[in-house]
Each structure stands twice: as structure tokens, then as C-alpha cells.
Length: 343
Ligand SMILES: NC(=O)C1=CN([C@@H]2O[C@H](COP(=O)(O)OP(=O)(O)OC[C@H]3O[C@@H](n4cnc5c(N)ncnc54)[C@H](OP(=O)(O)O)[C@@H]3O)[C@@H](O)[C@H]2O)C=CC1
Ligand SMILES: CC(C)=CCC[C@@H](C)[C@H]1CC[C@H]2C3=C(CC[C@]12C)[C@@]1(C)CCC(=O)C[C@@H]1CC3
Image (cartoon, rainbow, N blue to C red; front, side, top):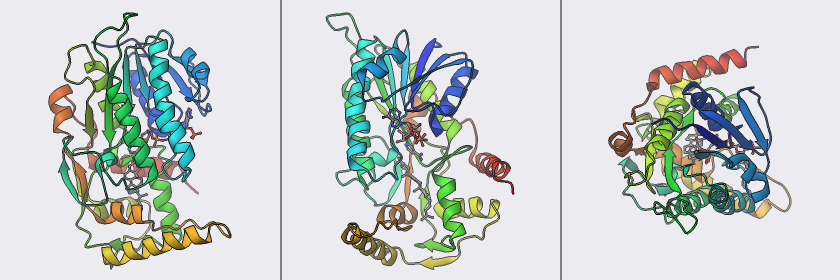
């Protein structure tokens, strides 16, 4: 069954904008709610405001069948208070506002990293427990928000006759046209000559997921959210379903953008310890000088361990199937980046 009207919270961000585009293509009426409006489309109704404020958010949710919540501060922000306020308290507000506006379905963009502790995960399922030591504070607040959204799922009508069906989507390593995170970071590293290195033996498998596949997973999950459906209150991994060696992916991206391939191997543990020491030094020096190291312990862990996740459950429970294969997705992303950055 196709739903009619939806609101994309965070619809001016990377994922949100792709989600809006696919929703329009599939016949939905779309509202966008974001802290600022960075694009325009006459078919979309834009609302600006802070998702932490009831008075800002409720008007964007009125008369809507499904809300997609994919707003977050960037994972690189480093601002703990902001993460807590937006990802945790803000998400609690999103739930309250959905109830107030009688929105019956809420789809959260979580992250597969909610189960990752910096150690190998191969073909990880949704049965894995939440990380007790998340890799950073961003991820800690993604765990808090996911728990709130799953807990809020209420299939039985309350005293006012309202229900709220919820589901959490856990994408991993999103890339694609307009990506403000992964490709710009890589290009920055390459320009500084820091992309020559391979951390570890180069044979760690990772999921990188094209944004269209992530978006497709969100829409299928929303359409499967019905009273009595097994999707209610659950979390689902969404990936390209084609794990690839982290360093093969990096090589394809870098060489595609005309930078040299990483080739100098550095032992994983050595770099991890150096990254930890650097982080410690940065904390000590913070009152005097702000340094942003390239190789943080989190990045080293993500670059040197296996972290790939099974999306068998999404395939079984709402017929998820990637819409764009990895090779094609990589080529299209490189082509798009080159066309936007031609000199
Ligand atoms: N990128 C990735 O690889 C992965 C991302 N995710 C999750 O996917 C979701 C989307 O990520 P992505 O598209 O990459 O992120 P973006 O930063 O591109 O988009 C997030 C959007 O939310 C907006 N926003 C932030 N705070 C608020 C607020 N208080 N009120 C209203 N809007 C706000 C941002 O505005 P502004 O830009 O001004 O801050 C931005 O437009 C996030 O939840 C993220 O945690 C999960 C797994 C992997
Ligand atoms: C050391 C090196 C070559 C780093 C460059 C690549 C990184 C920019 C990406 C590789 C894996 C990515 C990733 C995320 C951000 C970008 C990377 C670190 C997330 C942390 C983004 C937010 C999430 O929810 C989880 C992602 C996991 C993978």
C-alpha cells in the first residue's frame, strides 16, 4: 500500500534530500523540515526550525501519514551537548510531536555502528547487542535515540485512539552524489598526501552503501509498517549487500578521482596506539590550541577492522533488495563528483 503524505525531518541533508527525491518519484506528497533550507522544489513544502522545539516541528507534521527522521549533527561535530540535545532529547521531541500531530508511522535513520565497538564484525545480524563501549559520542547518542524510537512503538490505540508505529533503519558507510562526509574527507586526505597508507593488511571487509539503496530501504520499511506487522519496533541493517575490502573501495574512489592508490602498509595496532596518544595530546593542548588529527582512533578502527552487516532480515521482512549494485554506484559517484569539481 502506498502511503500518501510524509515529512522528511532533515530533508535538506545528504540522505534526506535523496529520500525526498525518491519519495516524489514514487508519488508521495512531501514536506521537508530542517534547521535551514538549502534547496528548493515547487512540489515540496519546506518548514524550517529546530527539531528540539515542539512549536517548530508540529506544523510540519500535521496531516501527515509517515515521518522520516534523518536529521543529526554531523558525526564530526565533536560537540557532545549538541549530540545529546539533538539526537537524544530532540528525538524524544520528534516522538512527542508525532503523537501530537497524530502521525501514525515514524521511520528513524539509525546507524549500523550502534553495535560496533572497534572490533571485527563479519556478517553482523540485528541480534548483536548495542555497543557497551561505542566508538564515539555521536554513536552513543545514536544508540539512545534508536532505543527511544523502538520503545515508542505503540500498536494499541491510547485513550485518544492514537497509535504510533516505529521502525529503525541502520545504514552503513553511506556514499553517493552530494555526500558531504566521506568523499570530501578522502579528497582532503589525498590533497595532504595522507592517503598513501593502508592500515593493517588491507583485507578487512566493510559495507559501503549507495544512498539510493539506503533510501529504498527506508521507503519499503515505512510501507511495511502496519498494525500487527513484524516490522513494528524493530531495527534493520540496510547495506549494498556486497561487502568489499575497505582498501579496495578506497583505491577505487581515489584512483577514480585521479589520486594515487594507498600502498604503504602500516600495522594496525601501531597506528591505533599513535592515534590514541595523539588524541590524548589534543585533549591536553585544547586550552592552548585546537588540533584536528586526521587519524583518530575511531577512523583507524573503521579503516582497519571488518565491519559488515547482514541485511537478510530486511530482505525477508520487507523484500529489500539493493537498487544499485556497488560497482555502478562507485562509478556514478566518481562521475558526479568530477562533474561538480571540474577545474
Ligand atoms: N553518512 C553516513 O555514512 C551515515 C549516516 N547515518 C545517519 O543518517 C542520517 C542522515 O545523515 P546525513 O544525511 O549524512 O547527514 P547530513 O548532515 O547531511 O544531514 C542532516 C540534516 O539534519 C539537519 N539538522 C541537524 N540538526 C538539526 C536540528 N536540530 N533540527 C533540524 N534539522 C537539523 C542538518 O542541518 P545542518 O547541515 O545545518 O546541520 C542537515 O540538513 C543521520 O541520522 C546520520 O546519523 C547513519 C549511518 C551512516
Ligand atoms: C583512514 C581513512 C582512509 C579514512 C577515510 C574514510 C572515512 C572518511 C570513512 C570510512 C568509513 C566511514 C564511516 C563513517 C564516516 C566516514 C568514514 C569514517 C560513519 C562514522 C558515519 C556515521 C555513521 O553513522 C557510521 C559511519 C561508519 C563508516
